[in-house]
Image (cartoon, rainbow, N blue to C red; front, side):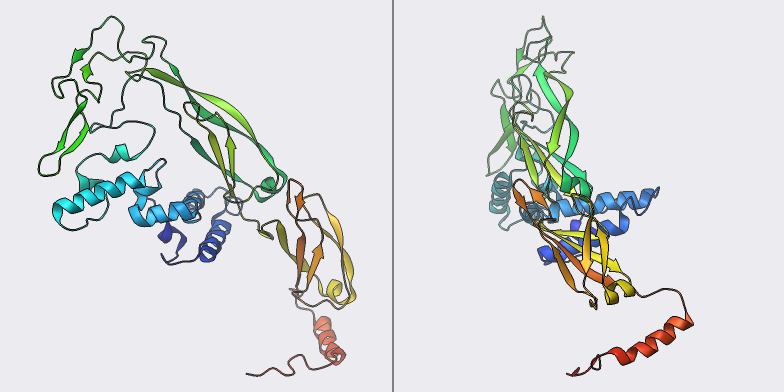
Length: 367
């Protein structure tokens, strides 16, 4: 069974800072990325778990809800105010505040989630128009796709009035009868005792009447089909960016696209700034060179000054992230690589090179 605690998935403490969470996510995402582990299903599943964990902990609002309510708080359309009200009511009955869980209340917590009226049997209220509701779709992008923009196609559910029952939810030709359980009110007492909690009638699902369900829509009053929507992710989308497409959600709500960007092995992003650790040879660093560097607009030549030190930073103005009319810079950090094959002549040359230092390299080094 997959680990459901995002803190354990990312291997961080509950007191971890945003930077610690982001660092842990990038490290694990890079380790289990499908491009690094081709054909390995375990790594692919682990990558999905890591992405899902960061989806919760990387969002301040979602993280607070998880800390307070656990996994239930991360569900779409969870209503924390109703959950707190139920928790307070339960505290009043038992004299002490109880930990939050679905089982602790003795009834289905479906009514804490928007978009449908739930009951004890998990059914939805029949008939009527589908309420307007936003649909959140998470889209995973490669680092380069996020920089340059990308066109995606998302299938969204579209509800239409049932052509058979015309939205009533009842089988044509049948006559509804008053529910004997709730006497037509649609509500019945949920808890016996000093606290009088009413809930949707379990027998009639809140309709107050009993009838034979329409065979086409199953009593929902509406039928659903999925419709493709093409969305252009603009250039410069960042991890956690959201794009709202008006009117393409459920019942006339909006379609909200949230982007998750896979980390890159060489580049990292900080706002509109791009940072690159550029591998260079000893010769390029000592003698100076012109080397080709990839940028979002294509490769450009970067001039490395002679006698450049490891870790030296160079700037390519305007070659960072483009978002609208704004443009960031590309910051290049030199990563000097020593030869990885043994060569006696090279070792001798290094020994002779000791005489070329203007002063001892560790001069002044002390505590």
